Length: 428
Image (cartoon, rainbow, N blue to C red; front, side, top):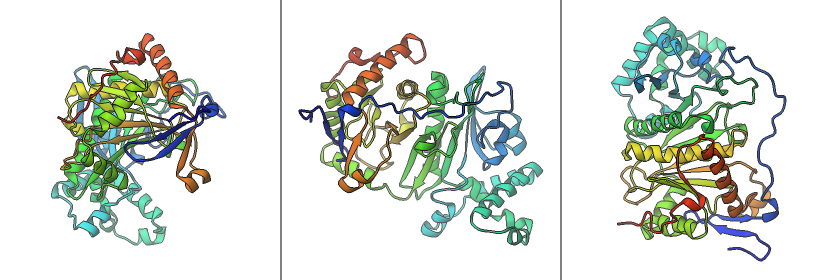
C-alpha cells in the first residue's frame, strides 16, 4: 500500500512481516566505507585468511573439492593432507570448526552412530604424518576453545587426543569456500573476490557444488529435518572472514519461519504465484528473467532484498536439471554483480524439505545489510528499510543493463524486456 507521503507499507504474503519503506531514505548509500586501503603484491603469498590456499591446513580436514581443468569440472574427495596442499581447488568443502549443532548433539539427542566409512576415513587421514599433525592441531584448537588447558591436553595419550577425529568428518555444519580472497591481479586489499566477480561458469560451479553438499548432508545425517544453506558476505553480515564462502547447517526441525511458510502453502498452493510473482509482474517489480528462473524485488523483507525463483516444477535443488541450475545461478550472479562487493549481504536458500508435500519452489533471497535492527523494530515489529521497492527495481534494472552490455553477466531479459507473465508457478 502506498501512503499519500510516498511511504510503501508492505506485508510479506509468505511470512506476515510488516515493512515500511520511507522514500526520503531511498537513495542513502549502503556501501561500507573502505578504510586504510593498502597495496598488495599481485604475486605474493595467498594467505590473507584461514580460507586462503596457502593456509589450507588451518581449517578442518577437507571433505571434498571441486577442481577445473581442460576437461571441465570434477569432484574429488578422500584426499590426503599432502594432496590437499599440493594444489588450489576452485571450491572446497569442510566442516565448520565451531559448529552450530555438533556431532555430539546428534549422538546424544538422536542416538546417531558414526558410519564405519567415516571412522575409516578419519583413520586413513591420520595414518599419514602430515594428516595426523593436521588432525591433532585442529582438535587441540577446538579443545582449547572449550576450555581445555595445555596441561590437561598434554596429559592425554595421542590415541585419546585423536578420539574426536571422526567427528571432524561427520559434522553437519559445512563450509563451502571459493579459491580467491582478492580478485586475480589485485593491487589493493579492498579488491575482494565476491560472488559477482566470479565468471558465470565459476558461479554455476559454486552453486552446483553447494547443491551437492546440500544433498550429501541429508544423506549423511538421517535425523536432519532441514539443511539451511546461506552465505554471509562481509563482517557486518556475519562473516568471520571477508573470503567468499557459503555455509550449510543440518538441523533437527524446520524452524518457525519454514513451518509458517509450509502452513500457508497448505492453505493456498498457488500462494507463491498469486501473491509473489503475479504481484511482482503487476507492480513492475520484476528485474530479470531467463527461461528457467525469474528475479524480483522482495516485498515484506526486513531489509532491501532481491529474490530469484526457479520457475520449473517445485523440486528439490538437486532434482533440477543442469540448465535449470544454470538459470538460477546466472540470475543470482547478476544480482551479486549489480550489488557490488563492498555491500554486506546475506544470501539465503529456501527449498521444500525432503518428504514435505507442499509445493515450495527453490528460491534464493539476496538481502542487503543496510541497517541493523534496533529498538523501534523490536518494540513494534514494524521494520523500516532504506530503499523503496520501486526505487530498488529501477536501480537494479539500470545496473543490469550496463553489466549485460559490458558482457559481465549472462544473457537474460531485464526489466521491461521480461514477459511479466501471470500464473508462472500455478499448482497443476
